[in-house]
Length: 499
Ligand code: AHR
Image (cartoon, rainbow, N blue to C red; front, top):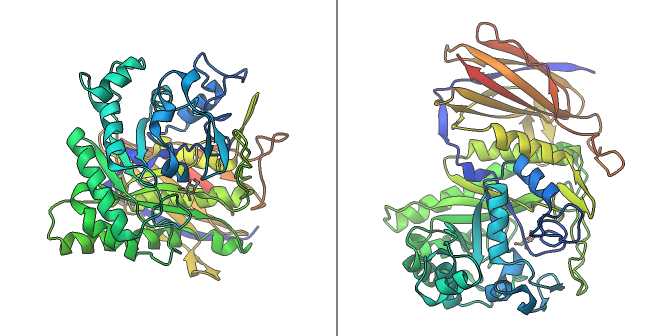
């Protein structure tokens, strides 16, 4: 195998911004087998007394999710939250139009809150801006967050939940720019409805934070004008603008696909510019940040709708090594953009567009599971502005890109750091010098690597551990410098400690 060389310069004083813990979030939708047979499966030998899958809960805890967005997605825009609360025997079976499935409503808001507690994540709820009205959005905030003594808070207590749920994060609708959305609106109509909903919701509970629907992706004909118009109307009542993006190696052009970080950064840059523009135009002192609350690789799975089945198999993607390396870059971008990006939720957490698949009696972890787990467990404190000098690779879509995609973090309180390095080259190892420029004494405590020789390599039920993150020997740091061999098609994570 041929090799080249690179240098990565780290300075713990050269910071970007504090890393919001909410960057390691997930998304759970009533779609396919995410909720039923994923999170909740009373028939499974792995179910606890509430019907939650213990093996799924354990894997999600292992990934240290901090926040979970629920209940949709496109599902949200036809959902009446009242269907999913109260005695289960009385909950209606409904035809669910977004995914053309039958929704049993055996899992709803209160079960979701219990599930979040089981995995130590904060809940992020959506209010329906499709068929739903602003009154229903306001009622749900009262139901969840008010202590008692009023109609909706007492209703919650009568359902067995005396203490309020204290839901802080609220999505005001989902992908309302998309013609596929139930009750789709144009930007001005949506902005006005979202403003009125958020006003009522914040009057119910002024501590909540609201998320305005941004463009569904950068290919929408209305992008980024949609974002500007909706923001100009609703700015003062919103705390975040949502971004959604699904990618994939559709052209089977692995070199370009492995440079996806370029595209992700451009998407953030455009919306960051839009936020700055609207803030200036409104002469506002208020800030709105970005919430990338749907992101994932999604292109191989069967796009068919549910044929009016309960929990149909929908979008159950098989992920390979190149997909995992794209996920690792996505996470690198989250750290590099941490000054404006404050929330991110991978879509979705189990079965649907997910790196975690269930069978009634088993669980399969796909390669990108390990990339997420490493970053969500190690990135703490502030993101660092890393200087990378690496050889360049030619790509069809993005011209020349550096062979290495890198991010780093440092927590001044614990003096722990982390460095995340993707070698996006397919043939050359890169012998990389990591140079600490701040004069502190550093040790590398542990190192892990996810690597393979074939970008199309996968884990399967028969061979579930072909691609995992292996512990590798941690390189020694001498005179503020360590040397590391980064194989082609690899993701490496280092955890460091400053003396
Ligand atoms: O995550 C699957 C779907 O993708 C969501 O329902 C929707 O918001 C997006 O288009």
